[in-house]
Image 1 (cartoon, helix red, strand yellow):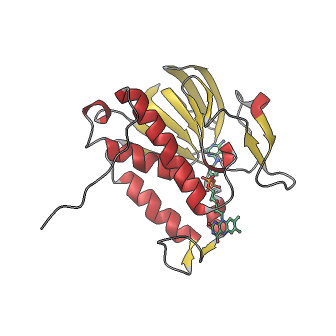
Image 2 (cartoon, rainbow, N blue to C red; image 1 turned 90 degrees about the vertical axis):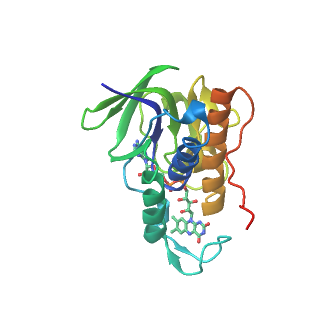
Amino acid sequence: MEKYDIVIIGGGVSGLSCAITLGSAGSKLDVASDKRILVIDAGQSHLNKAEINNVAGIAEGTKGPELLDVMSKQAKSYQNVTLLSGTVVSVAGTKGDFTVTTESDDTFQADTVVFANGMQTIDVKGIDDLVADHIRAPRPGMVMIRNDNGKIGDGKYVTGCAAGASSMFATAAGYGAQTATDIISTWTGKYTVIHDVLKKD
Ligand SMILES: Cc1cc2nc3c(=O)[nH]c(=O)nc-3n(C[C@H](O)[C@H](O)[C@H](O)COP(=O)(O)OP(=O)(O)OC[C@H]3O[C@@H](n4cnc5c(N)ncnc54)[C@H](O)[C@@H]3O)c2cc1C
């Protein structure tokens, strides 16, 4: 069974944002340099249906699928990030030794898991008890995973709309980055953000 430090379930906005922030830590922190990150995505991001006209910093009229493509390429540009197409059906185990299984029966071992599965139906064994109506999208079929400030257990995180964020690109992307910094901070032992600083001419 292939082993990863982090498996992210869902490669939409929040999952990719989380992977990009984690990937960016690899070249900046010794403690992060050998961490391997796997994103497993079923390909149903809500962003696929969107045209973006109201996201700070993103050109008006940007098509959602194009933006997803840019984010996927950005995540893959980090050598420690791997993207895989698939649907996760179960998560079992405990921190340091989770087993993530896909519908095609592939299994992956992970120290940490991040649920970034959006607000659509959540059908993953291991979190069934935590699924609830979405607090910021009170519509039929919109669900979230109940959590405590983004955590659902030791080594288990939830991010983006799955964590109860509003259905906005910036909110989901921001939550993904925050989840990544929370995880990085467990590696460093103090709250750590990954910044690049403008070089002086
Ligand atoms: C029609 C429409 C228009 C929109 N327009 C705008 C807009 O103009 N401005 C704006 O800011 N926002 C807009 N949004 C909202 C934006 O798309 C969402 O806020 C954002 O996509 C949420 O990100 P997320 O990561 O939480 O979920 P998503 O991006 O939906 O990603 C979740 C991913 O997890 C995957 N997944 C789920 N279960 C599993 C599983 N078991 N295994 C593996 N993968 C799984 C899904 O397939 C999906 O790819 C729009 C949304 C819609 C639907």
